[in-house]
Length: 577
Image 1: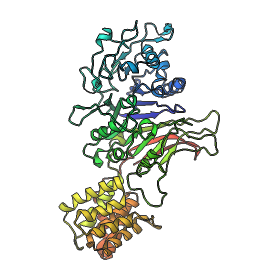
Image 2: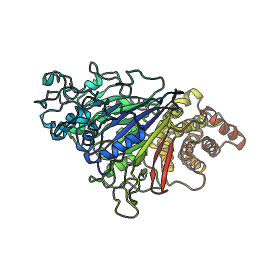
Image 3: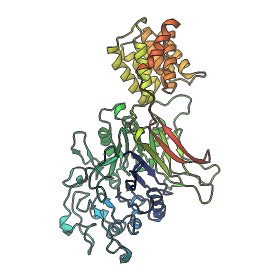
Image 4: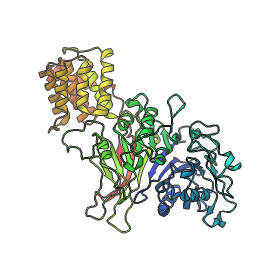
């Protein structure tokens, strides 16, 4: 039995958020219907629910029910569309419902009350006749006190599933119940009707990692409450956050959670703060506002891709410039970052936006940055929506998360530092940890700091490391970038007092990075660094050819991202490695 993971970011138009997670058996067992488990996270605004309903139906197919529904928090652009969905017969009859639980008096407003009444099949006028007797829902968080205190009142006439059978007196569970409470779900995709808590071998899984300002800890406990982010909006800070895992692949999404919570979430997701702990894909919280997706969070989580649910012509002009700068690899400044050709000082992240912010001009304009790709086409009628799907196959889920550039830089440094004929050469035992450190630096900060780290790690003169950094961070040279950058960096380091092996390794690290991390880039960068450091062609050639021996065999890509690209005028799939 093999599985495929699909993460559908639904374009709900204007501001709003809705994501559909699907674990699909491929191919199904002979003669059996395919096993499909699905979770809808938020539903956009109330008037956008037809978009969400149509999309869910198209993805799941006729007769397939939605396994679970998560309302991350009670803002109308996340919760509003869930209410009419819950009042539709068929697909949502047996859906398991998760949310924050019962807010304090200030949070129990009309929009919230409509939502919990809909869980029971009630609209503003009372019971919906078509739903009578067919609902088998379970609101898992019906007994949770989201603010740590019981609500002052609950609507009369409501029983399970929205309100516990014991009424107000049964709302007793703590705000962090979803993370560690008695009876709380250990896993989301495989809880509820049709699954029974049994996770098939190799299938994707999903868990809550934050709720009501509390965050899971690495040791299995729960920390919090954490508060006081940039925006400090209590409704946003209480957002539910989840982690999806499929083999080596992991995905993170957290509603409108803020920096105060993400500061703790990053410790959970990548506690060792290294390449092996990467979370390959994430949704930028709060639609790309400056209340989350900090520079520190991105550097620690090290995503390959981020998705921003911004919607066409959203009224808040998301994403903001600070978040754009962070995803482009720069500090979170209010003004645009410097233009290329120089590289950014930190990890740039490819990011996808669900819509153009100014569709009224030709061509439509986006607020995205250098690393952004904007989905959809608002120039035609009916407009093509900006839905974005991340798809991971079983084979891709087995791909090591460090990535090609990391492995290439590590191999290049190891080969050049151990070149016995060069002054300053190290043995393999000593060179290995240096190569790992330099590869980590390359992944997070780029080729300049990686080149500098080579010399710092082996005790070279500071001025040589500074020169190597400056050379690698300069304008991207013409010609073969792996060769020319290796020559430039090695020369700068040598001219400023670096030992030959150290200069060669710094050059090879920068060259392998600029060459895109391919095996060919490693070989020519190592060769160029060794030659610049004084080795003959005859001596450098076998070392360069052997540099890739430690590289694993070519691996599949991490995943694919499918969206409608206005530039090419077609649905395209970008693969990431």
